[in-house]
Figure 1 (cartoon, helix red, strand yellow):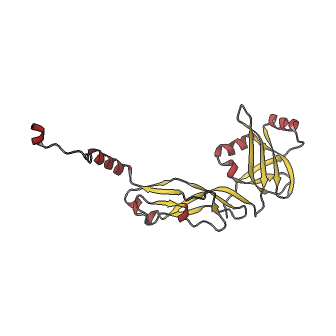
Figure 2: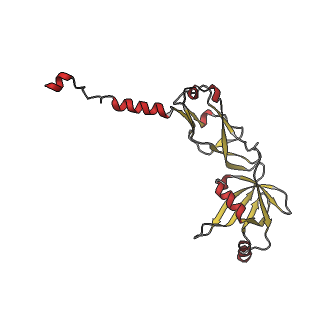
Figure 3: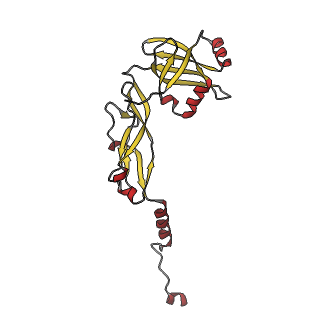
Length: 217
């Protein structure tokens, strides 16, 4: 199961239509709606500053939230649409969809690395590069994993960890069908630089070194 699902707080919005939406914006709110889950849609207002903070954090459309709405039970939601002002590019309306525990969603799950102490590549000064610190997985709303774990124990410089080598939580799958790299282990920068210098100093395959006798003739 996922750890702490972030809260998002909203207030019920009195009235619908353009007039009520304009009033909400003048009061520093962003109008929105919550729908789905077998219940009637509910018009809401969200504090502009709090919404902007969430938007700037990234992945807003792939993040599960615990919606706290006065007069309603907390419910898990996912954002399905953010409408923006055509000139100012600021949010002017947000749509959220309620999720049942059996609803399937696509979310970015963080990657945890283990086995550093048993990694020959790191002992030799190698560098671990996280190509994908998060992996997008398809899973049910009631069984969202907190993280996926990769092990680099026994890996040498030049080795990679791909999604097919990872044991994913039951009931989840990547949203990308092909195999892809999550992390790789590369040589330290100093070693790469010295190898490049050696390559530059070496004669070309068809180059014949000039001897002293050849130089004089």
